[in-house]
Image 1 (cartoon, rainbow, N blue to C red):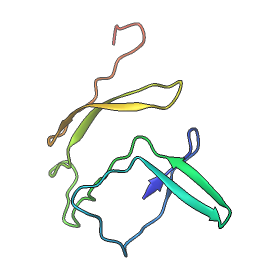
Image 2: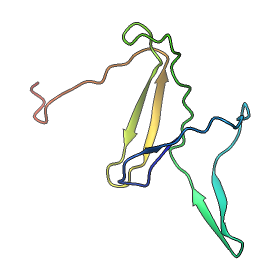
Image 3: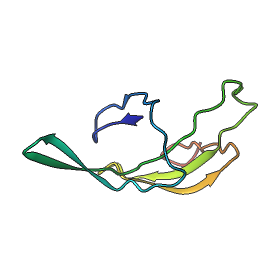
Amino acid sequence: MSVARFGEPFVTEEISDIALATTFTLDSLFVPITKMCLKRAVFRDVQITIPASPSFVPYRDYIGSNIETLDIENGLRKTLYHSPESLQAPNWTPDGRH
């Protein structure tokens, strides 16, 4: 699992002793901080990604590609399209000449 607060780097933690259901909803979670205090955590941009197999060979095997938009003001991103193939991003200069 990788998580981060907006503007901070991701922190990764492996959790291997739980079994996830085939389908589930993750919207919000109430976390007991103490017996007298309950905090609400809201998650966004949740993605479940299956890691590549140990036999994965880069540039021969592909894990798929997403086309996403990212609002740089608030960090919200939206997946517009997913392909099982490799999609390459176009690169251009601000003046559009290259």
